[in-house]
Image: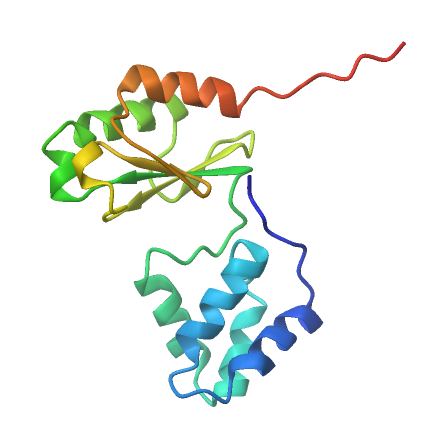
Length: 164
């Protein structure tokens, strides 16, 4: 499940202050913000730029260059499909097409119900068991379109509270 927390300008500044003195601090700050909040709030950009004496454009350029960074909150679950050659050779492209069609989204998008964010990843280190995906923090191998559908059903099922 998504571990993101609510953010505030103060909590953003706390993360920046903890790392801004390090050489090459921009990437560690961006990672820390995304690890804590699940994404990098747009309000963080001017704070980072000022702390590192960079322009907002420079900070935004780094965020937009690396596909890992999100600028919007992810869905309740993040599903990453491996696009490395080993996984492609055993069906990852077909799995990718199936996942996009089933979810109705492309990479770096979230389903309208905010349940699933779909992302590409370029190797999960599970090459012998491709095609592989990561769901939140769990890597799964030999994922077929049918297994993907079963996984989605599992992820999107929530217990109902029955009021007496």
